[in-house]
Image (cartoon, rainbow, N blue to C red; front, side, top):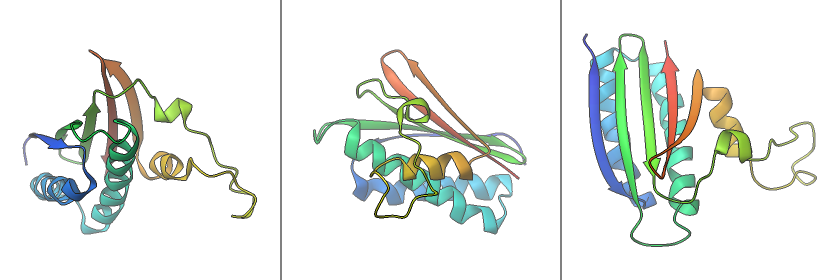
Length: 139
């Protein structure tokens, strides 16, 4: 198993998610990703991609998402890049109070909290006018 690298550019449309899952599957297969980690990775990637589609371009039809998937034995990194307004979900998304009942909680933040808890590392940076969210998974 050597290093893996895949790049893809997709329209920021939820219906394109299957293409992203396919690419994660190919990369994971090359890297020896255990089957029990695949569902977790798909869930996190779906949450990040759907949030980006819904919020980064504010309903515009022309938004694009750059995808970079890299890895080596025991690690997979999925990076999503968009040119929407600067937004650091790690720092800016509200942290939900999980001690409250569903009715008492303010909406929002659960998806980012899920991403925080289900990745081994979550990074954000703003580079060249683009948001770059990296989700790192190790096994």
